Image 1 (cartoon, rainbow, N blue to C red):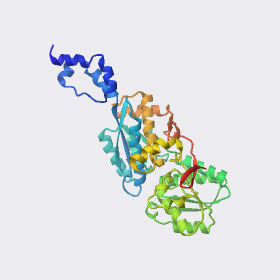
Image 2: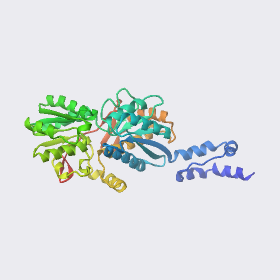
Image 3: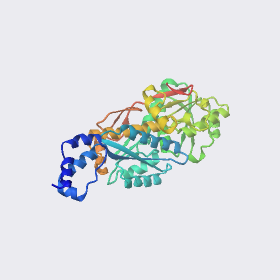
Image 4: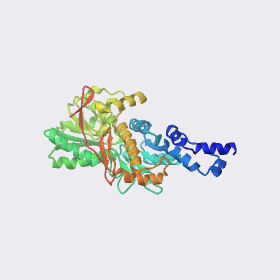
Length: 399
């Protein structure tokens, strides 16, 4: 018996099971070994399934005006991959910058597909997600779960595309009901970005429910991405029409400008936003005292003791407090991990097979995440309860 044969017998012997549990590595096997042992598939397959790599892609604006949102998502995915890795799946992530542009987001998706991406947690913004979802749903499919895109157009007609955040109609309806129950005597101005599907989608649903709930909307003001450096004109009109409260389904950067403009002109007005406004306390150069009393509907609070471990880990890794975008991305990775387990898939599963099997598993799992208890329907929409918070002394307090 030559030395090669002895080594073969040792490797395929009973000690291999214990070794496979301890080692997260792949043995490179020569053609001679494969030909003579006849058992190498057993050995290498066992090792691959114990901590084998599963590749998760992330897409978002890492540069440009919306960079803060995309960076939060990419960080949340990276941290989630670290925290949810186990003896079966070693989650690894790679992120691409799409500058919140649909065409660039598709290019980013293709780059990640070439890398070997088996599931996508992204994109970040709604327009980019709509564009990428069309590609992800085409053969060969790749499973997609967006942390923060909320339009129903993202998942409509697609079997392998899911959402972590609330849909636009859900947010608009719940916000109107909350305001009717708690601020029914106020006179409202509806303020939104008419060029953004997230903002306008929530606004449309809000208007419909506001009429049903008998809220008084005395003014409606809009803006677009290229005109969000000053809102003095819109605020002047709202003040003249007697608006005492603003409902603004906008992102936190323009929201910080809106609050500053109102303070500068002496306009004392209440304000409420949705999940896109979460993160306003971290806007660079913003006087956070202006956010005192601000209401927002979001599924995540960094001040919630239940989220303390995540908040600490995020701060340690990235030097800042996580927002809802980071939390939703983290929950997106959690969902992928739970769906993989439910489907019983190996780490080296083909992306196309993963897409169909993960989609089937998503409607069966329940994720107890940072943003609530999450389940999904067969339309890819998440089911979880929204929570209204008010900012008091620089912290989120349940309203």
